[in-house]
Length: 283
Image (tube, rainbow, N blue to C red):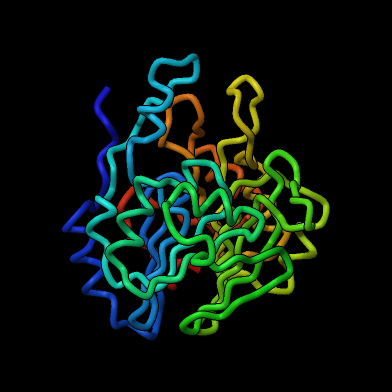
């Protein structure tokens, strides 16, 4: 089966990004596949959970859990320049990929790498960096870098796991800048505290997984299409962008089903294609 093509890819995507880089009146957001995004505002570039390789397809090729790719790679990670911040929400390879992150860190001097503090040693080993290089964050903590403030939100995948010091191993981030709030959940299920944690941020855009939680897949689960729409509605998100689908055949969902659920409860949403740009007019 042919791979789903990207709307923009490689140099064409970067040309589009360069064109919008100086914009300070609004932000721009490109979906890079799975849970990965390029965020731009006011001359700054941020990468969120990029997975831009075939490392998982190669790793599981001869196992009973083949990661058969559905969509073509959006961009060669070695092409990225002028990246101020890259983040990883947790240690699973589709959110912390050495083949993606090593060239990004190499080609972007001065870049900051935001991770859950609990994962520091694992991260340093995977991306071959000094153990003190990443910027560690825990839930209910915040850090501001280049006018972007990251707030740590716990994630349940499939449990809210902490290290011996109480630091979250799975996290999401609320990113605030220029009057906007974007919530990128990382991988998570619904849990009791999540609504109260997020409501005070007046989230403009909630980026939420929709692939669900099917134990037969043999991997940790996420919100399903109905839960993602309802979470957006419950926290008052102006727009929900669904993600974590159309990457691997065994672990995906239909975004049209998400659209149906969102319409039922009048939750605004935006469905992006791989390599497609959204912006601050989404909401």
